[in-house]
Length: 315
Image (cartoon, helix red, strand yellow):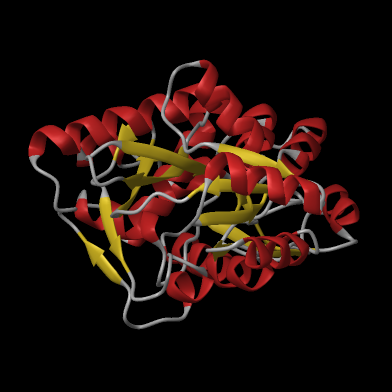
């Protein structure tokens, strides 16, 4: 697998690379760390790379700077939702990762689930919350426990597990402070897995464990007691099934270059798709670098592979 993933391009072939990070989303702090790590890796490999903390002056910087391509490390809205991809398309600047449609679709958890359902891919039952009456209806239709999610956030921001109607109403009210569209899903009890894709290759799945009620923001970025299992703990047949399902999930959304799928397994062993991340984290706690190491790629090789895909896909 490693030879198919590695970049064979010389550093000069990438031209002058702008690493876009930071931004204004709720995931800004994580994006700053990811962007710094990517920038240092590219510069260490001899790539002519510089960083842009994306703010109100971005249009001016794109017009003033000589930029041959962009490495997008913006997590969340404004960077992962198709808007930055569309801006770069209009500016004629090739970029890493998925295009406008796939980025916008994957950022919308509800629309992603609807696409998967239309193709017969398994994803937990859900409802959309816009009122207390919706909370009552969802509780009756889905039962408890449930998981509440802002439909357009990442990094588990605004998410909460609830066990009763009062908790559900409170979690809906909290989640809508991040996003007017709030999703509630049936709770899947069982192990969680995350599966990364790089240049159309499925990387080794990672099994996740945490003493928290779920794999929340703290467990992802701050806690020291989160467990990461590689190998993931599945037998070869079930692991192959998981990898195939995640490849199909990404193909349905149109993921390109790299991405990561989050999956739950229930007590009967069935897999359930949760969401797709098209600009996953690249911090020291992040999962894609961990999966890449298991496939034989160090962090610098991973970053170069993602950048090389932008050359092959967009010139």
